[in-house]
Amino acid sequence: MTAPEHFHESDPTGLQTLERFEKARNFNRWLYDTIAPWCKGHILETGSGIGNISTFFLQQQFQLTVSDLRSEYLVLLQQKFGHYPNLAGIVSIDLVDPVFDTRYAAHLQQYDTIVALNVIEHIENAPQAIQNCKKLLRTGGNLVILVPAYRFLYNPFDEELGHYTRYTAHSLRQLLQSQHLEVIHQQYFNVAGIPGWFFNGTVLRKRLIPDTQLQLFNKLIPVIRLADTITFHSIGLSVIGIARKTD
Image (cartoon, rainbow, N blue to C red):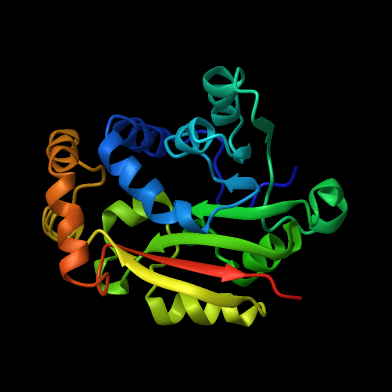
């Protein structure tokens, strides 16, 4: 498989970040609950990492195929989820592979939902990635995207994690519509995370999310969720877009 430019097989910072979020189960559950209404049928989760969200899909009996570019993550996914009867597969799919249609012919139009959480911001040619996601969907299928929000929040956290950019609801909608997908839902997510991200990353110039702060944040999720409701999901550290393949 051809890895995208700037891809590194070993990603110590990314793995450490995923391991810290693995312990933040309340946060992961909140994210899952937010996107679950838009998920159906056979789901392909791209950029599954170490399976922090995958576990909820499998526990809720969705048919799930997990995917990641890093072989170390694929091994961990097999170890964690190989025993689930509703795990349909563990695969490596490069969303910007130059011979995508040929290499992944067996996957074209095979999925009812594609989930890409914190994936697209890692890809320089985002339109190509979205186009290829569309190819993997059956007609009527949903593409569920979550990306980091607001360019002014770009800081050393983003640099260390390999983010090319951050989005707004408007720019994410434009990206999805550029590939002739019907945007059926959008919202911002996690408004309470903005101050911590800005202070630690922009002011203190840290390059890794502090574990103690993340665990405190995780304990406060019931209150933090309420903040999103009060602000009508109109601002947040991330932005979610749900798009449907209609043709």
